[in-house]
Image 1 (tube, rainbow, N blue to C red):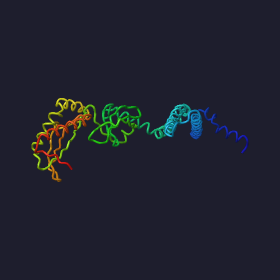
Image 2 (cartoon, one colour):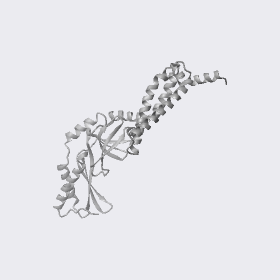
Image 3 (cartoon, helix red, strand yellow):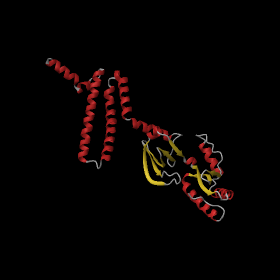
Length: 298
């Protein structure tokens, strides 16, 4: 190969020559793109090396997060900067757009899913700050909704109490797309709860049932107009039918030789534990006054 051929070969592969050319072929565009990728990687490596020298990471988690953010930033900055160069050859525009779009979607999959999740959260079937949700077996009150993540104030997993643990849990928005979740909306912030009492067979269950029913109606009855207004509000987006909304006591004979009295009532979600305490105190007080009602102890 002569010196003239070597010179032509060098000029053909020279990135500056390829960059100045406005009528590049597809192969030349791929070569230029490879040059630009190598240049971006070198810039990233040098930048991270200098950053680590100037301000070292305090722990592995901090270093991981910093590198992840830096990678995403470099991809976005260099991607935008390279668009005019790539698109200068308009004949290759459809091909380049297809390749670039596929690359961006794959590399930033979680980012796009987070954006989709945000739109789902903001939609009619989503939730808002103040709602109580359960996702991936974790329950909490929504305290913040961002474009990429939302935050819950965790609720203890014991369903009897619904008490806060005072821990914040951050979820990427893509969890809304990939997982099912349960909502107790502020629009309709009450749920059915059940309180169970076991009595001995020799107990006067009719009297006990009457006392429990009286306690529920005196202490825990939600105003019917409040329930109806909340149902009307929620019916704008959902076909909701609660049926009977007044408290009720179910009495049944258990195989263990006991009488089960199940007190079922509607309660505001955040008053669930308080109402259980009120019911317990009233039942203990009322049953203590009777000499023919005996609470079964296991």
